[in-house]
Image (cartoon, rainbow, N blue to C red; front, top):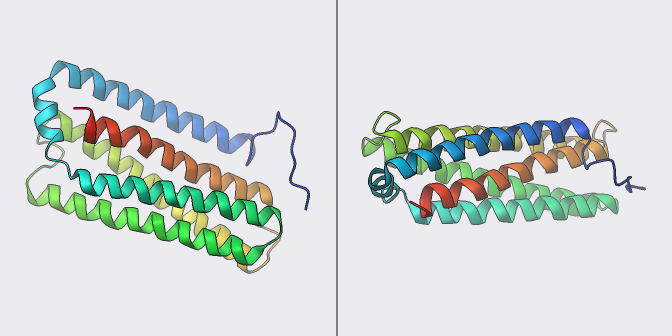
Length: 189
């Protein structure tokens, strides 16, 4: 398998990169708005940030980064036609993503039980919108990885290298977005 590409051709194709850039711009604008309102209401944002579970946030960061590493390893093995190891690493990546969603759901439950819903204050409005939107992206990323994994398992020609690169690129976008959200929401205020 020859998977070398021109420097002008991004991994996964141009369409996935248009989607990734649009998503990063959207999250970036929301994070800038969060920073602006946080500077306007410093005490409120600081006190609200203290109500977040930093332990769960840290574990979730480790889970997503580790799963991103596993996706990268899976891609590397796919390039060498080592399907067994590709599937091994993709399965571990999905487990990490699932662990993220389970812990995030538990954290959401904690917030709702404490009455920290979206209308509690402006910090929690940002918290729910940003982390909820990210949660949906991780869920979509897991579905994409699951479909790609089944395609690889069945040795279908449908799972082209470009499809696998595109799914990995989307997954890494989820990692990157969380790496922006975690410090801003959990640590900076």
